[in-house]
Length: 248
Image (tube, rainbow, N blue to C red; front, side, top):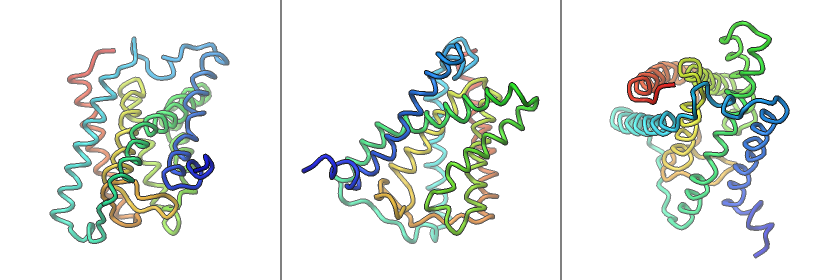
């Protein structure tokens, strides 16, 4: 079997290649920050004395619990949302995809946080007085990065609004916690949950999740619900980290 078939053409290879494409961002941003701007890499990530791993892990746990509980509640009270539910039955195929997800998604998610919530926020705050204006700009850019995703077709407005909301939520975590540890943890957990456990069918990717519920349909009322849930989720993360997290 040729390498060309293993990596670009096979479903697992294409999925791995998509995630591997974020590795340059993951490694280049800290290098640029350190050697071009002559700043310690820690300052890119946090204003605390050290990187708060407990914030990252705790936030991941909260995301998994919150999403899991939400899925159960939705399954019980809104069963129509799960009418197209499919379960992955090819365990060998699924475990390969899960291994790729667990290995590479942390780099993919962290790379986006390095760039958007770390580097770009710090770069723009030097020229703009309002952090909220900076957050709006970088969250808008974060949303535009997803504009070419297949699921944006036919629902561009609410889809990009949803991505923008997520970007702003991560910025709020940064604002109140003084670092992107929780944002990285939230991003990793969100993507692992969607790619590995309960996700949507994607015409351009293999079904990587254990459970899939058809192609995503995002309407404005879905965005309104997501907005309310995001307020609750972010409030829980901030409260829990303040109560049990290591002090800056």
